[in-house]
Image (tube, rainbow, N blue to C red):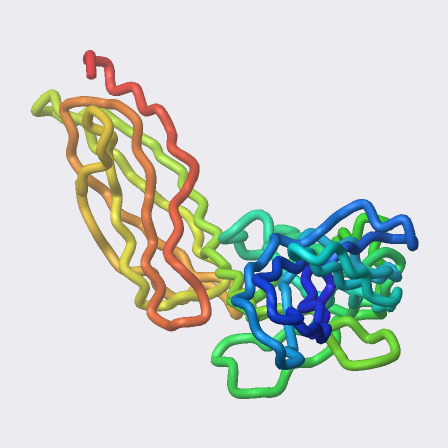
Length: 286
């Protein structure tokens, strides 16, 4: 059996009644240059089939080999034969950046074809959006891999969590990458305004939007305490438009600090996300 890196060399010999050691010489020409590990045989007079594995071959290369047997009588050398190592099987791997991607932001699917003939190979991106019940569909036109086999597909935006795969569409058997799931995080904005109350505390009003629309989603106002975000208050997003929901939550605080809003979706097409943290000064140290 011959692969792109290994082979099993076969031959026949007769020990001629003496203990015998055999090995195969092999290389890219009839000068050989390499040999298999020696194997010892007991004395005997029967013709035997012998076999030796070799490794470290260069893919898609013609090799010469011959059988050599050594015993007390002398050295016997077999006739020259040849074989050609196989091509390296093609394989595909992909990833995405960023992961997850924020709703409405661009995302790139990157990957590489490896194996013999990986460079300049046509590949096509396919997608299947949540809930993954439809078959994969092509996204745009096929592209060509670079000489190294690397390729990139960039999408302007991704509306919902989506599965991707890349298919090599050149002649011969198709090569398909493993399926990659790219999560889409909610786009969350946050605004904050404050006013001092008669009791000396501050009334802080948090408001913003969630895109796409996630009516009923849990909205958590969080404050950074040390290295952890702690819950301050919670509410639910309400309908604002066909493309977004909104929220408003007022809390009473004595201390400022870094705040953010964390939103958990109500359906499986998107993943939770948070707003950009914002430093809020309330006239006291924090």
